[in-house]
Length: 261
Image 1 (cartoon, rainbow, N blue to C red):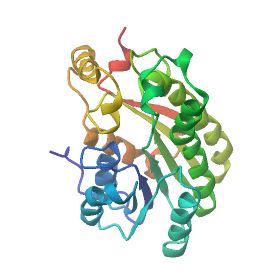
Image 2 (cartoon, rainbow, N blue to C red):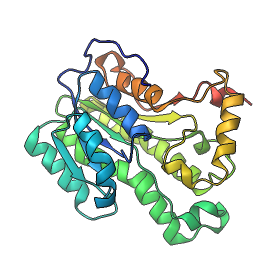
Image 3 (tube, rainbow, N blue to C red):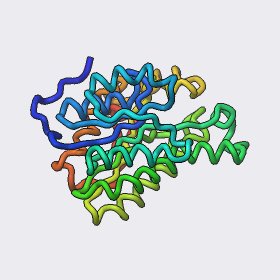
Image 4 (cartoon, one colour):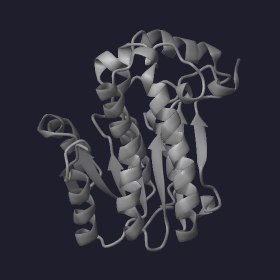
């Protein structure tokens, strides 16, 4: 069940792009649902034709007027999405980047043994794509805006089996800080959201992930796992003007797991 959200439509008039919905267990779906509940209008993307069948019903539920394919590894697709937003809306208030990928052989192996092609693909999808989205979003954020990406605790601590993705997330968090510094004068804020472990399609590729979930549940002060709706509500808050003096942050939504030894 979604967490309760105030009836006040705090993001009325805001328009944003949600990238990364794969199904109704995706973090991006939790974010999209929260943003929509707060009154925002959404553009939604899907990875490919196979994913469309799962995402299209969710896009209809969100009443998304823009629904387009986006595989960031396909040349021109990112540009096409932002061009469509420019034609339809003219401006943009926020972007949620909730995608990451590493080839299975690279992700499952030691960082020490990472092949160049696997390393580059991991960085392209998991980090560079966010930088590119910031570049494309900037001219549309004429009144300022907020850019969000998803990270994880494995960026700053060695988490067993997280491997090369921890390296990519560390780079992503550094990119957030540099983007925040560069775009801040234009009123554009940039944040990395760091949820606790969640049973999503993306996490299914991490070996022994069930053990990581159990560890998070027993170790976190809250003694509970977070939900996609927890993540969504907190992310949506940061898009509100009340958070206008917050930028360049890594926001942990993990029941306090990251503070424990």
